[in-house]
Length: 253
Length: 67
Image 1 (tube, rainbow over the protein chains, first blue to last red):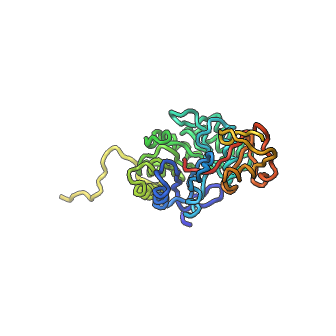
Image 2 (spheres, each protein chain N blue to C red):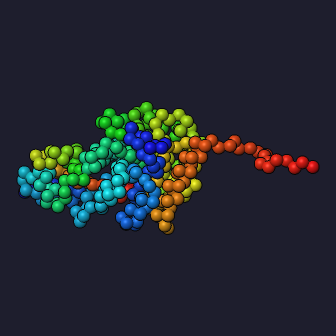
Image 3 (tube, rainbow over the protein chains, first blue to last red):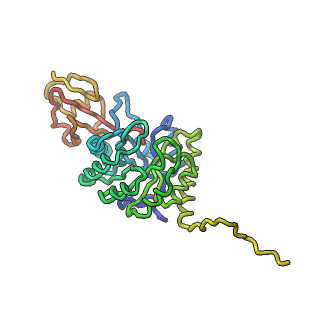
């Protein structure tokens, strides 16, 4: 595999991790997932609907995409730990996207509860991918707690505001020993490219695709955007200059 | 009969009902779901011999679209 994304020893050829939330129906979701080329996709854990399951797990299995359960909606470390344990039981995976939010208006991570939950889950044998603030100090603390990846937000979930503090993302990348995944806030393809140009190992997004007017087309755009950003990062961009620099030889007069 | 709160709804169960019996009554397959009994996960292998006590709070969960 050429230039794989490696998280906790597992290799993925795609650096685009998708969420399944917000899609109008499963057939729209399926077309978007295929167009995105994703190999790892989040699901949430909720009460069963006795009228019939949502079918999202069957869809992921059929497409050969790994399911990454999240702890969305949890407000405390205790809630998140229980949800992760239930997810492990229901899905048979020890991987979890750890999400502990502070309030409904911002959906920002609660750093205290997040770090607490991360420590508990790592000790319990989980592979923890932590959704976090764009805080370089917290990102390091999560890595020290044993998280397999840190996933800073670009901006709050569902806002599409892009990456509000690119320098913080670069600071996180510069010191991280685990993959950094830009998670949340992506609005359009250029945001995903910027994340990769800043050195992120992958991008996780949902709303930008599932609530786009044409989810399938936006998913394809995101796939190319992530690849473009990765290539550009590796290619080594030119330094930014204040004054122009001619690209044609001077005229001989 | 005993009473348990299952996914937020009060439900009457025969005395001695197990987690497996309850899933059967709900029409939920054991695969792909997880059960918490009073806030503690019940492993699938333990469903058949874990009885639901009177007044228990049971949550039956599965994966849905999200994130």
